[in-house]
Amino acid sequence: MLEVFMHDFPKGADLHNHLVGAIYAENTMRWAAQDGLCVDVEHKAIKPDHCAQDRGKMRNAATVEADSSSENSMVDSLSMRNFHPSQNVTSGHDQFFSTFPRFIAGMGVTHEGAMLAEAVTRAADDHTTYLELMIAPDIEALIRRGLKHPLQGEDFAAVQASYSPAETQDFITLARQDTDRMEADMRTLLRCDTPQAAPGCRVRVRYLYATLRTFTPAAVFSQISGAYALVKADPRFVGVNIVAPEDDRVAMRDYDLHMRMFHYMSGLDPQVNLSLHAGELAEGLVPPEGLWNHITNAVTVAGARRIGHGVDMAYEQNASATLAEMARRHVMVEINQTSNDQILGVRGNAHPFQLYRAAGVPVAFSTDDEGVERINLTHEYVRAAETWPLTYGEFKDLSRTGLEYSFLPGNSLWAQTAPFRPVHACSHTDMKSEQLAASCATFLQNSEKAQAQWALEKNFVTFEENVNKNTLFRKK
Image (cartoon, rainbow, N blue to C red; front, side, top):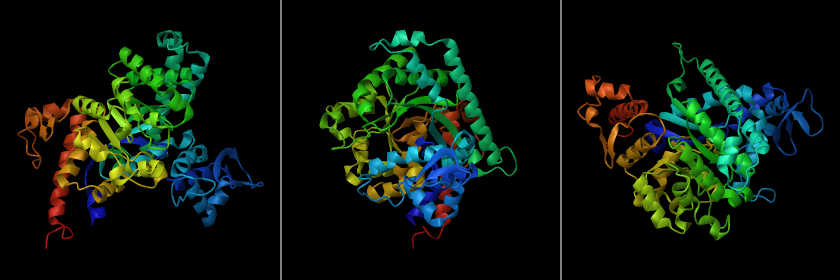
């Protein structure tokens, strides 16, 4: 009953969703077979090479896909399905991060539209209004630029000045073209703008540019600088993030430096939104001092407006002060329960979800890498209901919070959020009515964020009416 209820429950947004990790392994294998790629059956990985025929441990992906046993073995290798610690892979952390290099070759640029179609189709089935997907088109160009322009110490201004306008514009042009192609392919696959349009066409989508934290400082700064330029040039990109394992040796060594890079760039372009992976760590994964300040510095140095994961908050040196600052500045935390369990072993009351809520820090549920994890957003809502004593009203507010802290442009529908109360222009409009007050119609017309929030409220009205009619949920 809970699964049925939460499947239909309207969900505002999934704000922490890596597109490459959102794809189920079966689809990646199908694309590899279509493209005639090789599968390394010893290491259970898709390779970029083409295999006209099997040769040794390299087999044609179509042959592997056609054999149920072989395909099942590959799906387990390319995801968290059926994972159990072994001598070869001792932790969920290692299995999770090792899947990406094993499957990435099966995606290729020709399947990006299909990837986006899969993500929006699942979001529509989950009754999710909005997706904010992490992607990184043409990131290789930014990394190469960084290798050509050394960073001397922390002279960010000098290296920023060394980038030629032509280099930056070439990156922006290619990134926009790639995104155009991905969206066009998605719309073709889902028959958008036709009478047969699939439900996924109705899901709003925006992007966060995902920089990589495991390269040299010069290459990381080049990525961050390029990401800021793309956000300013293309309204589909609504913010910047930084990704890759936070416990990586380079990521740990340069973490504070990366936060100062964001601080510098935000000084130049304060309107660019930041949602930063921070605190995706757990006790024992790194030395204790590695848990002391990542969330704090993401908030106070980099100026993040949202935090992804934030799992190690209780181990921060100034946890109480940081929580108070996050509450004061309304810095939201993207809660990824299954990901935190699979990668870090953090679950139940060991998770800081209730700590954030007690401190008044806004939170919302998200999926992280739903394909690798073998979940969807409904699963995260069900898991929360089974873990914490949350009321229906609290779930409703958690759903609203996702949209409230999205980076969609425009003013919010809500004048206040504790409790949620609409702005004056819409305060006298009955959500059940099809007629909008003129003032509310004008307000919604001028704000894409408010339009999405209004759509969510209308979905709540329909959902609650259906629940009241449904004998499955009717009180005996």
